[in-house]
Image (cartoon, rainbow, N blue to C red; front, side):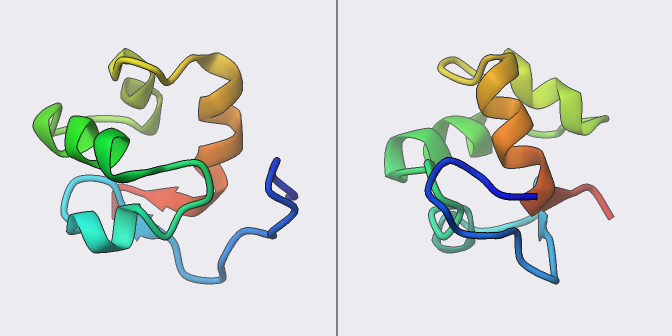
Length: 71
């Protein structure tokens, strides 16, 4: 899967519930403010729960989900 930045998804995904901010900001399109908002919204029971984070709608979620896991 290709995302808006032109970078392809990593072979290892980032855990949405446990990743530190430094890992979250490595995801294209996730800056420090979004990473902080994601961390504050934890825990997530599914990846789709990410859409409840302010600023992450369906389209942005579709771009981000290839980078994320809950495992």
